[in-house]
Structure formats: C-alpha cells, structure tokens
Amino acid sequence: MSVTPTLPLLKRVPPGAWTALAWCVSVAYPAVVLGGKPDHPVSHAGGTAGHRDWALLTAASLVAFSAAALLRRRPLLSIALLLVATLAVTDATRANVELPLTALLAVDVALCLVTAARPCRTSRAALALVLVVLITHLGMVPDNTFGLTTATYDGAPAPGTVFVIDHFQLTTSLPHIGVSDQGVLAAVIAWLVGRSIRQSREHAAVLSAQVATQAVTAERLRIAREMHDTVAHSIGIVALQAGAARRVIDSRPDRARDALTEIETAGRETLSGLRRMLGALRQAEQDTGAETAPLHQPSGLADLDRLAAATTAAGVRVDVRWQGERRPLQPEVDLATFRIIQESIANVVRHAEATSCQVSIDCRTNDEVAVEITDRGRGHGTTPGSGYGLAGLRERVTMLHGEFHAGPRTGGGFRVAARLPVAGGAR
Picture 1: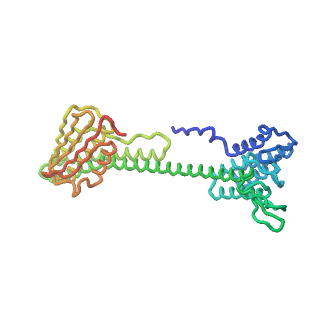
Picture 2: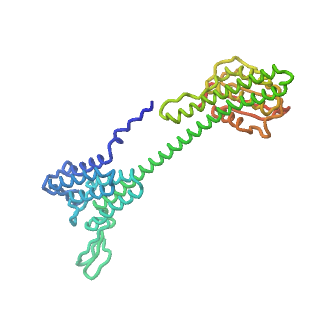
Picture 3: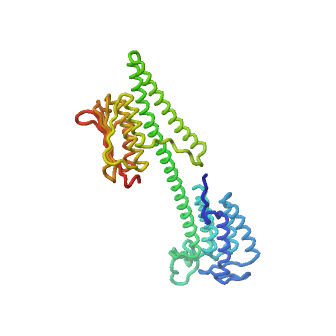
C-alpha cells in the first residue's frame, strides 16, 4: 500500500495566502513600526508619506485580497490589482510622494510566486507590468536615479546639472538611489528569486525523470539477464538431448525415451519459470502502487548438484570440486556464483563441443569466493568475452565489485573465472 508523504507546512499554504499575508504586513508596518495613526500622514524614511484613511485602507485591502484570490487563475490581473491597491493606500499617485519599499511587499511576493509557478511568458509579462508602473512613478519623483528636475538658477549651476539653457538648468540626482528606486530593484530581485526557484524545480523534475528511467532500464536489464540465464541453459540441454535421441532412436529406444523425458522436464521447468516471470511483470503493470511478487529466483549454489546432474544426463559430464569449507554466502553473491556456473556450462553445451567440463569453487578465504569453469572444447567464440551471456556475467561481477576473466586457454578449450568479495557484499 503506497502512502503519499505529507507536504511541509510552508508548501501547504497556497500562494494567495502568502500574498494576503504580505499585504497585511505592508499595511501594518507604518502604524506598528513607525507610529502612524489613522487620518494622519505617516513620515517614512526618505520623505515618503502614506495616507492612513480607514475607508481608503479598507477599500484597498478588499482589492488586494481579491487579487490574492485571483493569483493562481489570473496572475497578471492579480498583480495589476495589487499595484492599484498599493499606489492608492500610499498616495503614490501624487507628485513628489515616494513609494516606500515596504509598501511593495505584496507585489514583490506575488511576482516571485508567479515567476516560480507560471510559464516564462507569463512571468516576463508580470515583470514588465510592474516595471512600467514603477518607472512611470519614478518620473513623478525628483529624488531618484531616473528623475530629472528643471529649474532656474542664479549663479553657478547646481550639482548634477546635465545641461543649461539660458537661465534654466536640467539636473539629475544620479548616482543617488532614492526610496522609489529601491522598489524597482526589489521587484527585479523578486523576479530573479522566482526564476531561480522555477529552474531548481525543473532541474529536480529532470533528475527525477532520469532516475526513474535509469531504474526502469536497470530492471529491464535484470529481467533480460534472468530470462537469458534461465532459458539459455534449458534450451541447450533440450538441443543436446534431442540430438542424442535422434541418434539412438532406432538402436536404443530406451535411451531415446530417457532423452525425451529429460527434454520434457527441461521444457516444463522453463515454461513454468517464464510464466512466473511474465505474471510478475503483468502484475507490476496493473498494480504499480502495490507490492508485487518477486520474480522466481533459484536458490543459488544449493541447485548446483541438480544442474550438474541434468547436464551430465544430457551428455556433458560436469565435475564439481569444492575447495575449503562450504559456508552460506550472501544471497546476491550466492546467486551470482550460481549464474556464472550455469551460463558457463550452457556455453560448453552449446558452443564448445566438449564432452566434459570442470567446475572449481574455492572457499578457502573468508573475504572472497572464487569460481572457475574450464573445458577442452573448441572455444566459445572468436573474441574473449563475446556474446550477451558473458557480458551479463561481467556486469554481475562488476556490480558486486569482483573480478571476472573469460577467454581461451593456452592448451585449448575455454576458461571462465571470477572472484567475488564476501565480507563487504554489494555496495
């Protein structure tokens, strides 16, 4: 049973609630921190003024709360309403009244949230809307970076004069940054923060998709490897027994009957394994959230005697030699060791044209187990390690941080050897 994790408290709060909270803070800041009172102007740093008429404040708050409710569905309209409410409650529509930075808190929060959650086109349009309004307001205020002032002068031109025409001069406050200029900078910073949040979220989504894809690919490779290991050996035994039955069917009917019995047994076991494997796959597709039955796995080296007996009965004698004391191994090491032996024996049956092979399992050291399979056939291929079977074995051993070697022997035949760590296991 899958359980969806609960989101953190901060993420459970909707964007509109954050915007409404920011508006309440921006409205309460002049009265609580600066000591303003209703129906009286409040002095802000930099000569700004905010009007505290309760009727206007209530109307502006209603507009702001409506904008917060519309933030998710109509983000541009929401930001436009927040700008109107902010300009109204601060009296910033009048000339020479600067717009305090704290008054833009709701606008900046909404801009950041829209940028983080909405497409790039919408976020850029929201930023352009805020900047147009704020830069237009800057033209009405002389004490800011962009504001220009014309005046007459008597004597030397005033500092910051751009040019002089007769008795008139055009001055600028550059490079002074006024209170209204800070609002423009804060809006740009809010947009950049929201953009960073969106990019981080998109990057996390891409990484999550890559991890899911890699998990699916790894599972498919594991299933393909298990299917190859299960089917390849059985098909090799079937082919060998069928050939033996064909040769003795006239002269030794009893031997042919035994061979056909072995073919039937191997075929039934292979079909049973495939049914279990496909059944587990179908169950995983139909019930992705529930726990699925694991694919059938052999019991590891405990099945080695049965494997050797079946192969010997098929015409290829398997001599198993244990060195050291047999001891239980970790499941992944035990299964990998069995698969190495099974695939190597299957290659002997299918490719080597040998009548026997030797399997040596060395457990004399406590930190590793070594396995070696040799034969005196004609070899398994032109290139050492060729074919999907040996490639799958090499992958298994690599995953367990072991060593794997496969190639022709100097005196003829083929050799497969592997060393698997026991103490550390798979990491």
